Length: 199
Picture 1 (cartoon, helix red, strand yellow):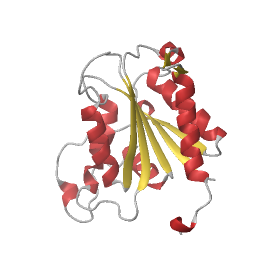
Picture 2: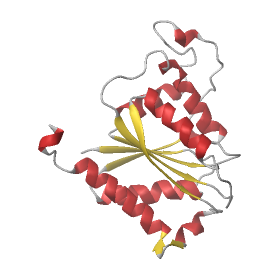
Picture 3: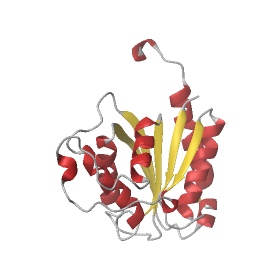
Picture 4: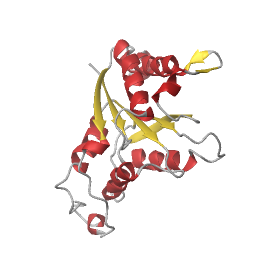
């Protein structure tokens, strides 16, 4: 069975982006994907200190005794990675950014092979801001690229103050149902039989 790795990047348990992760998983599992969750707030991730030791072979990080290496390996291995995060000051929360920064060791030797897909769901309490999601989306794009993934889809929601806001509707479609359908569509894509063009 194909696996989706769903990363909850919020420091707050049960909040808006955690709810996003859960709703996506409901749809994906209905479509036949096995979902595994990682909450970065529960991981021990030491921040990159810019020592430069990963620049030279064997490109190892001296901080590798924490959870970051395991999480990065899980991201590389999954069939699909979905990153659910709130936006703080136009960027990712500190713990999530620490995880992203620890991929620095792949800068010299990125993961090779055909890229696997990634998607991101970003939520913000702020209702305005033309570039509200731009910085986080760009950072995630290059983070995933180092790990052999392509960020194929970024969805975002503004004015999300709490989980109850998923009950609201956009263009007549309840947000919660739209997220479940998003997960279901990704499951359909990953579980569909290979066609001649995929062989």
